Length: 480
Image 1 (tube, rainbow, N blue to C red):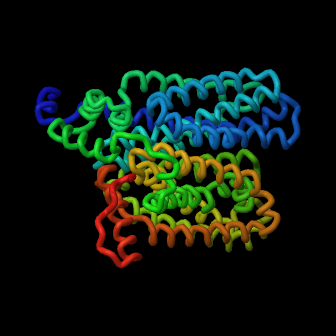
Image 2 (cartoon, one colour; image 1 turned 180 degrees about the horizontal axis):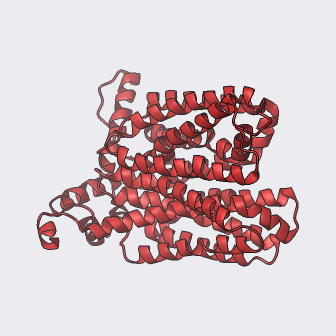
């Protein structure tokens, strides 16, 4: 069978498995830590006898580190390659994980979590970018959606670990277990070459061809090689070219999707999960933790897996539009339900308002997980031209991490200012804005090669320029 597959010009399947593994591990870096830290913070507070502020810093500094890592990740990916950047990410992650698990003081723990976050941020840029550049276009959306699925599934595993192992020094073992992910990423990246885009940027056509042969049918390798080489124009792009009118539209699109992915309520739901389920009638902390695990963690992971199968069949744009509309309706239900959820039954049973609150949360998580959760990462990693892809993905990823940090940091202040119902009404309004943004600015990219998407932006820019000037001039050279 292997011989007949190669005779037909199909690439070996183990190469696709390696790409999937890189995406899975890159997403699990953040997911496992986010899930497990939620239950570990209580024990960390008692171990080091620290106040609430230091506990909050322990939780949030991973995100700050990820912000710095994302900004550095684009430069590293262009400087030492996508694979080299993944090695840096894995190294930072392994060291940070070991130090945080063995931390003798709260200061050591905070420093370790900052370093851990740097590894997460670099991986969030280099992992999906590597997959976007190496995956066949017919399955690229699904492969990139695996990043979000692995994040949500790892969160779910972290939640389950918190339920099973609590108290004493168990938090050290739970946090330390993440070292397996970093070591696995190092081992996987050792056996795969870098992307053809990276090799051609260095002028190494031979290794670029070998890389393409692993994932592209043999009869199409030379054609794809010429397309990639033409799109790169044999040189690096400057920051001036990145901010040129020709590329402002895709840059703004990626940044906008990263913003809406974080500002449409998912972090509010996760951050406020215990209070939501308390208002719905779950009285004990154990019941609230269990509800969070299954109503948020399991639903998020399950529907993120559904998105893996839909992105390359339905397309990015339809999923985003349906998902954002569903998220807006679900959050409106949550907002209205909060108005009546305070009138909880004295026997602890779920009220009608509490039932609607619970349903609204579950449907919101499902719509998010099948749409903007994975689709935003997919689009961000496929809409940029090769010469500026690393920097643009870094900017969009940094926007993601920076926005997540700000929401986590100021969510309680927002809650004090607007109230529970008002906060989720605001999130619903942002979902509507996200719907209008996608409808107005996002073209469909399903089934197109990265080079075809690049030329799509060139044609769009030329059309708008001619409409503005009234001329019939020809398209300017790509990245002049």
